[in-house]
Image (cartoon, rainbow, N blue to C red):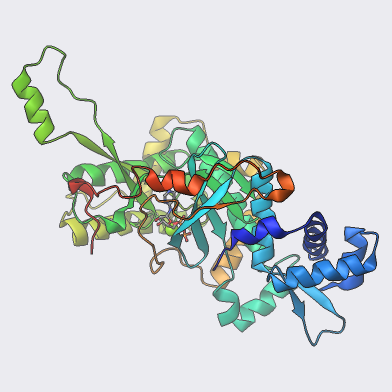
Length: 411
Ligand code: ADP
Ligand code: MG
């Protein structure tokens, strides 16, 4: 879905009030009646509210619902996007929005920049984008639920993703650094690499395979199963490896290093809305499926088959017991605010509307470019700061970064 952040700077303070009022009103009204919008926004003049409503509707931030018993409006995805972006802007988390680098079935991914020009990733969850339209019975099912709308479900997905990413990051797992979460969005660090899916060859497939399997095992030790552990959700980052040569090494060994630089391929795991606890009723199914996905991909892509048919879920549980690991991230996340009830709601939504993870998701090649970045700072907030991040980043080494021979993107 399109995200047009340029319009943000044209919204007046009154427009924001009215947009916020529509959002608040949607908590208990599927269609928010105009008098309620007026009341919540508590703008002095009624005509002012109408003008704002018309501005917001023109910008597709809210939509008028016809044929309803009363005149009313509904917050559109665009409006929710703006509210979230504005919150990130105010928190000095996002300064500008650049290229879209990923399009999933249930999310849109953008490169954004912080006020200091640091590149980050904005993931906008869009649950219901496809599913609501296609499955009527599910729509009815969701309507019956309290707050069971696309908005609520997308927010749950973002909350879950952020909570798990934070728990994993805090415990030294290779995941993007979580920066912020607001409404249906998560801001995280940019992984400077490619999804495994786009990599046609790696120097040492068995080593990478072993590392991925041990990651899945380590997750299980901490009480977690990724649930969608596959080539779409494993990014590979290149890291120049510290040379083993001592300072006294001869010139010739240095030359040798230059010809075949030691590069380490670091897997970084992303995409957590489907994570489950190892205590989940179907834990074994999810764990085995994760392992099977990795095996299948390594066989197909790198012609590598492990001699070991496992590990099975039972192996993972045995290892977890042996490790005497006291930390259960599934339990910690629950305590951090993403409750069991929320987890259940999200899970049943995902099951009912058939969110199946990434198998068929499109992934746009990430070139790290911010491109024609759009500043979120507008005149309203003294936008005299003319620093143009777009141009700055356009010159960055990353935008035309040639793929290393180790990471040729697959055709
Ligand atoms: P979805 O839930 O739609 O599958 P993902 O979180 O898997 O969303 O992201 C989709 C794609 O966006 C990824 O395959 C990857 O190419 C890109 N992407 C996501 N997060 C990052 C990140 N932190 N850094 C770089 N690229 C990312
Ligand atoms: Mg994904």
